[in-house]
Amino acid sequence: MNKVCFILLFSLALISSLKSQQNYFLNPVIRGDMADPSVIRIGDTYYATATSSEWAPHYPLFTSKDLVNWMQIGHIFDKQPEWTSNSFWAPELFYHNDKVYCYYTARRKSDGISYIGVATANSPTDEFTDHGLLVEFGKEAIDAFIYDDNGQLYISWKAYGLDDRPIEILASKLSDDGLKLIGEPFSLLKDDERIGMEGQYHFKKGDYYYIVYSPHSCCGPQSDYDVYVARSKRFKGPYEKYSGNPILHGGGGDYLSCGHGTAVDTPDGRLFYLFHAYFKGEGFFAGRQPVLQEMYMGYDSWPHFRTGTVGKAEQAMPYPETVQKGVSDFEDRFEGSTLKIDWTWNFPYSDIKTEFRNGKLLLSGTPKQGNDWGTALCLRPQTPYYTYETLVNNSNKSIKGLTMYGDDKNLIVWGVSDGKLELKSIKDGQQSLIYNSTISQKFVYLRAQVEKGCYMTFFWSKDGKNWTKINETPIQADYLTRWDRVARPGMIQIGDTSQPAEFSYFKMTNIK
Image (cartoon, rainbow, N blue to C red):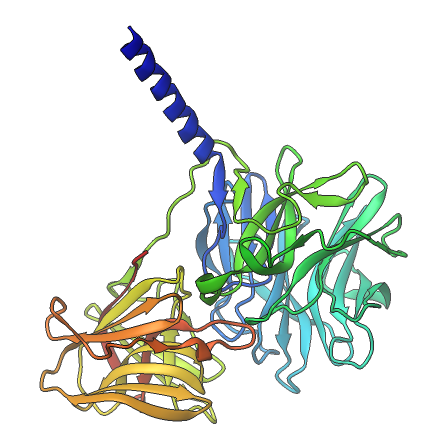
């Protein structure tokens, strides 16, 4: 009898433990380098997008039913808007009059100044129509947010970020269709402390309008981004900054830094903030990843986060019956006629050309002025530990193979060219030859292994089963990190478009 009771109690405790575990999830909710996320809810479905920076297509688009498990369904722009050149930052989704709006930041082609444009679609899954430039103000206008104040639309943005004066959050009325500014801009909030101010999100609760925003340094290994809040009884201000700021920060918890997000309400009225964070240590090399935390209004009429002011990866599940899915590996056998939506390419530096032929991908491109290092087709890394590999299926004078890509002046190339295997490191445009060897076979398998986010080991194989390691000491690739983005693994072709790289497959496998 005692044995039966013990088994029963143990079983109940185990069930209770499992149930408790399922009531929590671990951030990030979307893996990979996607800063400045924006989220909306339409009915019972959530949609999110984020910065794509110097990678095309522009602004990856995700959907979810539970805020924790997200699936990519496309991009806001498969084709670059005509007025833009590069630096696609901080898209903001807005649902209004049965239309979906995306207010986005990009550099203007004519002068390289960052301004705000707008595009619309009938639904998030439809093609977006670009309506061109909307906010053209000063030396820079970035980080749009749209707020509906009892039927009057407003747009706010960060101004004076490149001027020798305090940054301000400015705003303007919008037309009913959301496509034109009305009247003169006005100031909402000023960075009197000179600590930075951007990534604003507006909401109203009770008697107060709130602006949640991020000061300090957004990007890179020294980032100390965090989350502040201010409030006013009028949308136009004046705003009072919370004396207890920051309401969320990194440093002491799981995040190095965190900030720049928007919140979305659930059907039962709870508020969840989707923002980006650099994880500490080796997690940094996955970039600024979208993370989720619940906000609530305190008795002091200020917003707070459920798990306190220190950013934490483990959070209570928004929907209790949800089970968080694990990290997915990636494989592309090039059996279709288009690229999978996970792929990204180095559009500021090369015009890509892809062709699908008998289950093979032919990759080439036309490099733009100043780019000596070809066309890269890459993925966002999901974890700090992974391998990626391919089979190069042809022989010609172009370099064909794998890359870890920062930009056109900072990359690692592991490839084959005219019967020679070569491993090259390019830093600030200067190349170093790390390894070369002559091979006789036409086909060659190539593999790279990444540990701790930036330590790389390289392999080759004749048959894809028996691998030869070429460097016993891993190569440290942290120098590839750019100021606003981390390096991406993928494939590369360097050479004339008449001599493309032919790949039979690409596989990325998470190993830890």
